[in-house]
Amino acid sequence: MPIAAVPEYLGKDFKTASPGQRFGIYLPIWTVRVDQEGDVRKRAEAKSREGDEVAALLGQGMDSAIAALRKRERKPLAGLWDKNDFASRQSWKEVCAFTTEDAKRMQALLIRQQAQSCTISTDQLLRLHATAVAPFTTGLGNEHPLENGFAFLNPYGLPYLPGSGVKGVLRAAAQELASGEWGTSDWEHSKDHLKRHEVHEREKKDEKKGKHLFNASDIDVLFGSEALEGENHLRGVLSFWDVIPQIEGNSLMVEIMTPHQSHYYQLKEAAGSTTPHDSGSPNPISFLTVPPLSKFAFHVVCDSTRLQHLAPDLVSNCIY
Image 1 (cartoon, helix red, strand yellow):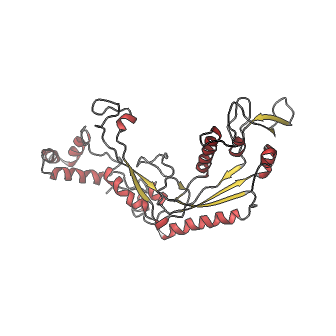
Image 2 (cartoon, helix red, strand yellow):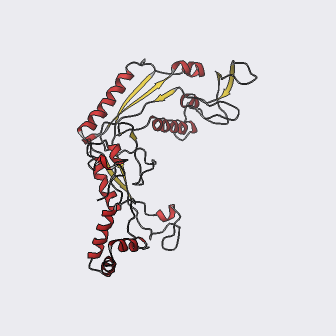
């Protein structure tokens, strides 16, 4: 049976661990000697030509059979601590389940956020509640043995949407509005005609501290921007909190995407070509999602003092 890559004294039962831990360090998908021996015996029992060959190898001893099957180009035997493909498929079921304690922790984190938000002035805080109408995923780009990662909040091991992701989506939406993709807009973000906001910059060498004009749009003031040549980085006035979803049904879901042209996207020859064609083999890829009807609470905080300092003209146009 495949095991997790953890010390033996931790045992093998991780059902009470958090989803993030079960998806991470406690994922039992790694091949051990018992798995290799079981695979060899299963192959030897097959009523086929390959079964006869493996049975003959097994007659020379288990060590010899394992060594020979490891060298095969077609269907090689998994090596020690290699990922076990069968165990990988089964592990999704173990990862999805939520315990009662997991649900309590997620509720407690949300209550903590709500308590913290009550200490902030209402003219500086925007709170929005939303319900997912479709499966939702986050953190797919995180590295993971199962290929597709997922964002879990440490040290709690619970699903979350990072505030940086919320900020990135809203900034991209503002940039699209500014570009005119959605019709006319009051947003301004053209790098060729940036609005000039008057701010206090840090004191530089051989320069006196004071007011300096620098190029920044309203989007840069709100969301921040990297430094243009010869200027300082700009920290935006908006802060976005992490979002802790309240999971519907107390269980995550597994979705599957099946790209049919992976040979084209990865530039690997299939049927003699790397161009798209109908002979491409489908490649099912599983990934974790938050189920529909899960609840989300978004919090955005505006540093009004800094906004007044950076762009007083923008403050005058704000509607609370």
